[in-house]
Length: 456
Image (cartoon, rainbow, N blue to C red; front, top):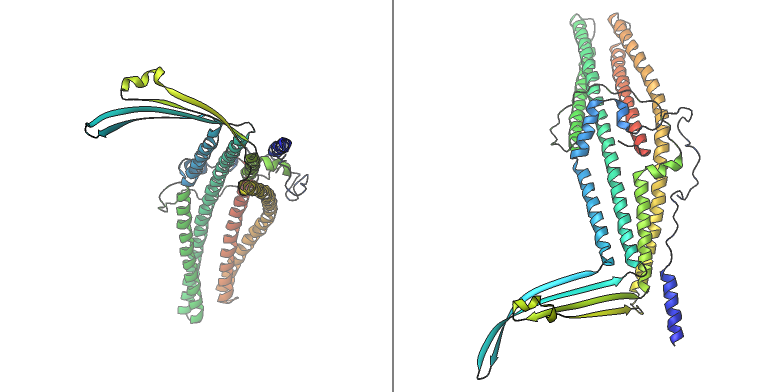
């Protein structure tokens, strides 16, 4: 019988002290290529240490600095880091002795038949000490899980910081683009007003029909409506930017009216390097390690626990006797507890934590693959956006030239009013699309810096 218990104890010890899984941060469930499939590998320009600096915009730097200091979402992320660190301290407190002290005073009244009653006060000073000796490292693993979670939360904070800088920059560029779009529409309205006056004069002289005048005035009204829509976009973008800065959304406009030039093409580095730079990937890996530590801690619940407890104190009707060491009574107890049957609680906890570790592993792989996708997507998008930018620049040149020819031809009765108005619409559309693609190139570059884990 004794041999059975010995074999059972050895089995529990061996199964409970399993080492943690050896995780490889490079193992993402897919073979990593040596180079990115998109981009221009022949052009080498290192990822800037501070990507905001490449835009050379003092106002933008000031906005990002204000956002990093005042944004409430970032402050909430910082508070989550503090809470995670405190939780790690709580989860690790079981590794140390727990010491308690209490003191109280009682008024006692005793009644005795025929002898009246007596009243006296009793002072008590009691202490207790309890300590579970972490022989197998169960509590240490539990603490390590919380510390890994704290690391992940801190990395999340860094990711929120990068994301905030990117959103401020993109909103800043969107606001500038909207203001430029408004300027283009305002110029178009001036040009169309001239055309409407020209058609009105020709109508008054009986050279054109009333339909021509109505078409010109309708086209002018549509341009004025477009201006209202663009100004509404300006105020909405300005308010969104102010929220990122931690300010009241008054809709104040910035003074900047020029989009910066797109920085030169950067070298994206190697795909394997991304796993160390990306905050979300690093956080997912830390959470995987935390899940492994929890699974290890739960397996050690099968092992015997060794506890040391001590209790003592003194009780007296005289307060001065409480400080007399000779009046203190105490005892010390050492115990060993071996779980034999818990109704499936321990096995259920082990299975749950192992399943969560498997979940964390797959979430890490999914996060890593999405990180690769974002880089590849941003690299490919930049190539296509550059080609669109070239085509739209040519379109602007052609429409501006055709607009001048259309005005000349209409004055000389060579074309109809619809052809003239169409030339103005084409010019506005081309100019607007060119501004939009210019801003999209900048936004995509910010997405690339963010996807590569660039710093601010």
